[in-house]
Length: 384
Image 1: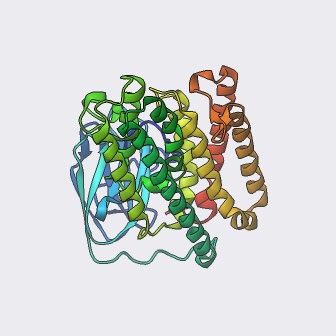
Image 2 (image 1 turned 90 degrees about the vertical axis):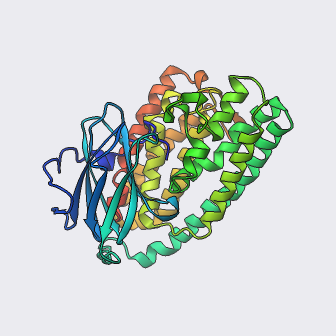
């Protein structure tokens, strides 16, 4: 996915340096799996090839570079199987996952960096131990309902992208600008799931910073490349190939969702990832930098996160009602500030119209919500 300084996941960085002394690939770890030490930076993975045994694997990831970095394990169909994002330079983080035997790609640092490889020996990974907190049978219908929500949003995404790119193709600059913000809403609501497809995500939602050639890089496509054309260049000329590419990529996303198995931990993590993304990068105004329509991304990110928590309400209430009450209260504070600047029906103000005091309050409220959501996977017994 796009390597952007956006989601400093608290559940990852809460353990800096914990396994800094871990050994080489395949060394037993205290968590019961095998640890794989790997460095990430702007130049890629160090080492470039690593090995592990099938089952639980704990990646001990050190950011050896000078920029915020990410790490992804990519499997078949370019699906991201697990990830650690926004790793601060110098930090060491843990990523615990379960892998079957086979060969995997590793994204280390950023999109432009050379990819590494992981060879996992053995057959199918051993079954994960039973969840001692929540009966999986309780989570199954909740995850199914979430997938229904994701697919409905993807259907809407295809529809809205069609309207947006149609305006571009007919040369209607004003209509294309008006359709840009609404077209992004469904994507932002389901972003944690859309980003599981590492080949689609950067084509749809990468920023110019993700490419060596910046805004002029041929690989820079999708929403933000079209945004630049409309607002900075001020024209729809020359954008038809890009609009066709965006339509094709969101259609491909929708197609793949039919056969995607969403794991409970993807859902639980996703609630926090959406808020971390807003808190860590979108509050700088860098997401929609050309149009300043960032609130069209921020609002739906919060909505998508809250939808997950709403679905999990009965389960969380049965574990800790006080925690749930605090979580709902934290969402309410964020929602109240955003509501001052519009909604999807009325439209949102541009990012530069946010009062500095409200911006500061929103940052604080998001940080509080992010911290609370960092506990959610653990409280549900879904850490690994």
